[in-house]
Image (cartoon, rainbow, N blue to C red; front, side, top):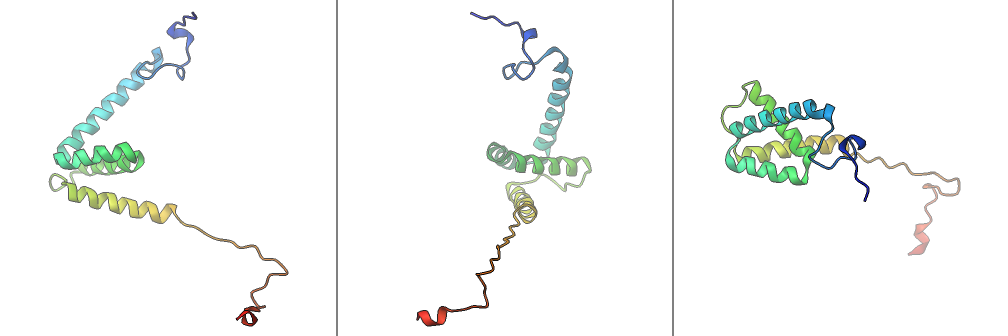
Length: 128
């Protein structure tokens, strides 16, 4: 059996939850930042809204992260009038979804033009 010491593995090969010696400080900073963000979210959201946000995060991580960032920045700027309920959270998600839809989902169709295929020659009248 091939036994590998942790020093023999690259950071990419380590199992989840394990880290190389130099990344402990970075992961501690990330954990601290995440804990602060969670504390702000718990104070800014009602229990139902927080539960919904966590369920959304399981499915659409990028959308939930964007809403979390928006809520945290509003809370830090003291622009929140009170706790955000589930209805207000849904409105924020819909607003964010509309912005993303407008910017990301533009389809442009470019048709090829052939010399023998012209829209001017409409010969469909004789088919009826």
